[in-house]
Amino acid sequence: MSYYYDLPEDQKTISKAELKSRPERFQIEVMRTWFFQRYQDPVHECPYDGREGGYQYIHGGPYEAGEELFDEFGEFIDEEIIEKLASELEDECIEWSGISQPDDYDDYLFDIAGSVADPYKDLLASIENLRSMISMELDDSHQQTLFKMVFTSTITSMEAFLSEYFIGKIEREPYSLRKFVETNTDFKKEKFSLSEIFDRRENIDKYAKEYLVDLLWHNLPKIRPIYKKALNIEFPESIENLVKATHMRHDLVHRAGKSKEGNTITLHKKDVVDLIDEVEKFAKHIEQAGTPEF
Image 1 (cartoon, rainbow, N blue to C red):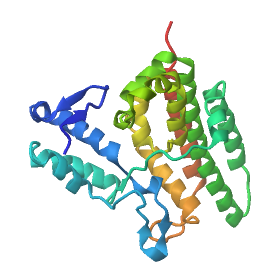
Image 2: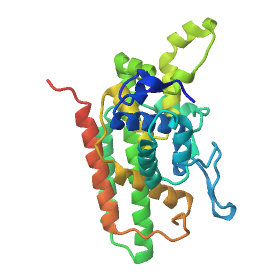
Image 3: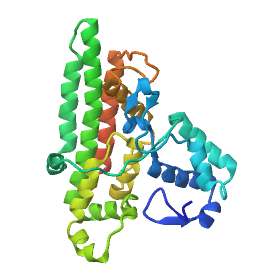
Image 4: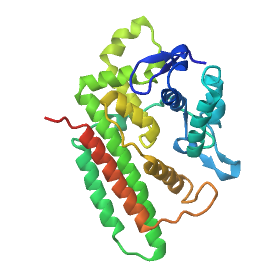
């Protein structure tokens, strides 16, 4: 059990005793922050094998949200409050995976990450191309293939925008880099000897970029607090549709277009158009939130 917990909105922590006396809504947000630091929907990283019974929990699991929350907070948070959050999390995912540690990064990806001069403009160009593709008229079987290709490409475009925007920001703005390093919960777990301190300080931008290149940028619940803490950019209040779309993209790519239950996914033109519009709206929100007012 932890002795101190990260606050949802900044880099400070709160003790168990302090958390116990706080209002319900505050307690829920602290517990939610704690949970997403340790667990994720298996759709993001776990391979799926229907013959082996479903997801292969390569990072630990499956975990039940309620069980993990009660183990950690049950001694000092009211049961009803824990159950409320557990119910919300179970609506999103029944069984959760652990979170992987950063792997070795790809040198090529490291070099090009953050190199796009205007990520928002780049995204708009991608969206224009995707809209042109979706207007093509084909026979039914080829139309489905086209819809699925455009759907997955739209999510990929969103990932590229999120990563390029964030990495570009911290490379250009030392203050944003410092905020990112100071507030990132994974960095708080890093341990190194005193003899390494100068190397760490001199290469902090490299260490930060290595971490960011390895991030899964479609994992919006994990990316959301990173944007908030480092760049002070709030995601839109509701990102539920985009989260659902990332799950469907996983099915289209990794399950040959079938749902977890084995049913073939059929997309309609409106599904794809709505997703493109949602991604464009999402990116516009971030671009405007990150543009200083004069």
